[in-house]
Image (cartoon, rainbow, N blue to C red; front, side):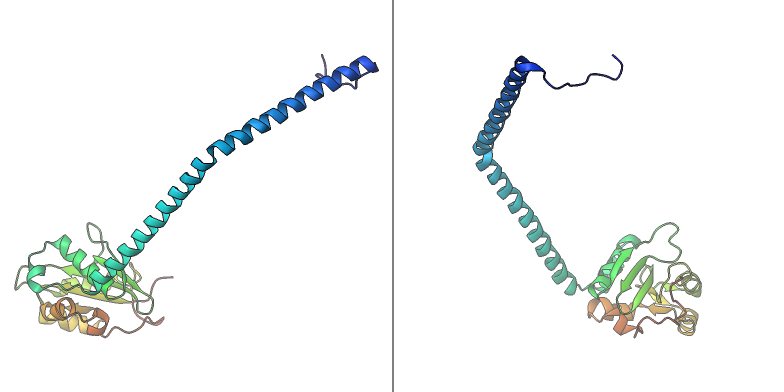
Length: 225
């Protein structure tokens, strides 16, 4: 039938009566459905309420646990001290993580990025006032020395690649005289065994130890736009 089915108005007393019966039956069904649903809701309401309370309590417990964990980590990091003997016993990877934790202790948001293709950055930290710092970690055998080549590499990537305001090379050993002089001339800070002791064992903040200035827009190491 073209145009589909269409409802037409009842005609005559018989059709009106039939339509009224159908409407009444539908109304009764709707009322029964609502009544049954309301009864079921009343029956399960205590269970739903208990479930909601349990879910809320679990959420509060998780948040509280996270807060306590952060406080505990903060207390642990604030008291973090690492001895030179502990540094000497580390491998390269653990040395990098230890430097990251020291930066966090000093108020930096730091992450370890060392590995293949790190482009002379093992740890990168950000500070609200001091800006960004790039740390190149050089773990050596006891008495080992770091040469000028490391300084060249850090200078070449700290600002242009990593957008750093400060560049630092840290070792548990020593630097050659040429490396220290070159770093001093070209704003590549260095932390040798003596400075590392003051930073990690004595608890002096790195930015205080190196007298790092606040971030400056005119800094050579300013971030790339």
